[in-house]
Image 1 (tube, rainbow, N blue to C red):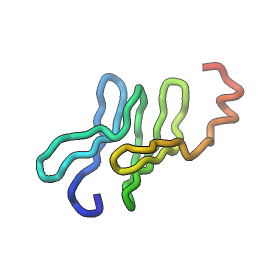
Image 2: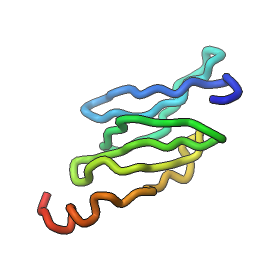
Image 3: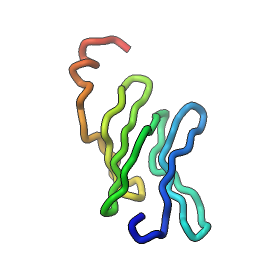
Image 4: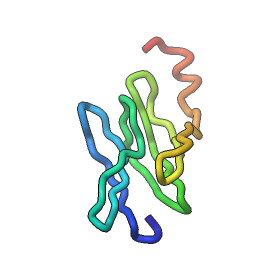
Length: 88
């Protein structure tokens, strides 16, 4: 985080990769993303997190949420046309 109070990192578990927030003072680890998904990259700025997320039925898209994981939302729809043409 910008204030140095936490560190963000990716960690894999049971085939999924999630973003976690780690308290820099030695506190706990808190997942920021969840569900059966994979996060490939992320950026933290101004109290928000942008990340690439995919799951078994959806290729990678850009998502965003608060630095605490609140209000997660998909912000890109680059694969909509492709998904409309294929059956997964």
